[in-house]
Image 1 (cartoon, rainbow, N blue to C red):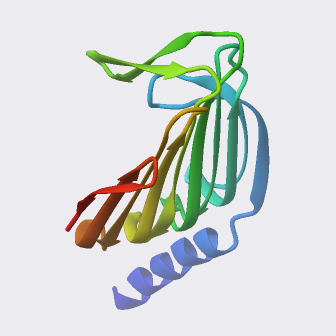
Image 2 (cartoon, one colour):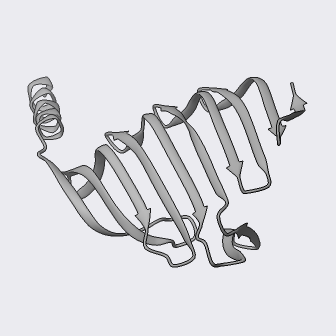
Length: 166
């Protein structure tokens, strides 16, 4: 009986370890906001399931704003450096984007928002920064996470003035 179990475990491990990495490059819909765009990512097919593994790059094809996301997956889990940016395109006064199912936000044309930090085993880890810049306003914040939990100091400044620290 032990020999059968050992054989099954060995076969399962070898399938997972030696699954061929492939690359997808094409249409992609973000789960958040049903945003359409183009993605390129590496993946493995394991038990008829697509598991992202390697670099992930996404950008929108929308006329009103640009979203760019870059990061890495290890066996389907976010790991390493991730960066997301949102920029309102010029020529539009305000852009309405769905943040949650019942909320909307407005992004003035020319405004850029950047969220950047690291994941470790799928959880935020280390220092994360958020920056928002427009022609007349700058906002920066910094927070530290440990295994997905807020840890340490939080700092926020608006147009160069410290507003919150703690």
